[in-house]
Length: 446
Image 1 (cartoon, rainbow, N blue to C red):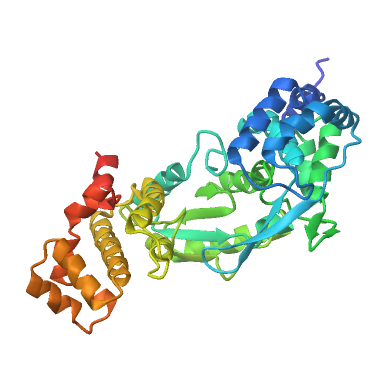
Image 2 (image 1 turned 180 degrees about the vertical axis):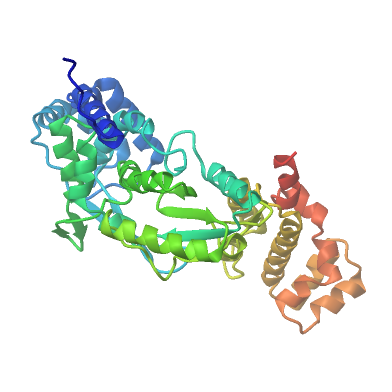
């Protein structure tokens, strides 16, 4: 008599297959510390940390001094790491201003801990890259913000004009350690490495000379935190994929594209519940919204309904604020120095934003920057006779130069007068080396 095989549901079979694959992977990752602490990996990690520069941690050892320190203490350090007895030092906390106001807390580990974390990341990134979602673009090799923006533009072109713009509240401060360690243990079989990562998660924060213990969150600013954040949020990616959503995630900035406001409201509620109940993270209700794609910004841009990109107003405002700080009239330095300081700011800004349709905007910004510089040069001519002589030396007729020099108008108003345009014309700025946004925009997009 033929035996009948018991029926097993497909979901159960899939779960067993996933479990078996996970066990095989953990078996292959039981000695990752050997790969992490090999000489070539440590050397590569040191080069990367040195390239990133950065200040010293609480032990005051500078990046450039590490090689001498390592030559003397390296064997002891590696031995303690292999045995699992190494204890990370505290993290120096600093606060930097956020673009939209408030302060962002950054943790600065010691150079030794930065190099160890970088060495860990170099080994773990290839392992996790195979697992991460195609919808995730932040802090990943061969992926960029511009790729994320292109994908968002594609969704808008397909008619998904509404976006669920989700902002996670103080993401790096509230990550649950136990959940993160559980996620790591599903892939990593090396218990010494898992113990070391937990120590880094819990490494104390030094504020005003006092070290306080960390009970949740990841140390934002450390080489390991971008990878850990992607591991935490990969669970969100997989959930959104299983629901069939069209979305783009860059770090903790997640946009889900839908066809109507009502659909967006439903998605916002259900996904928020998942994030807060399952991932134990907080959704920032004040900054999260459902709106048309062109009513919000994403990675500094605004996606239009036809899929084209424009530069978000806040990004323009921040750029202009940087220019204002460089061209302050009371700085007391030569005009040529201002132009030299402006060049890397303008070049870097345009390199990021040249994917937008913004030729007219850039022409206006060029004109505004030239006027700021004319205004600065005017301020340097403190006396009437000094200004008259400067204008005359730049080819302005004597009577015209006296009209402007004797004018009671303010510097900004004077800077827009024909005499100043003649004295410091566009061609002169080009000759002296002022970076031109609109002409370089054409070169970048040719």
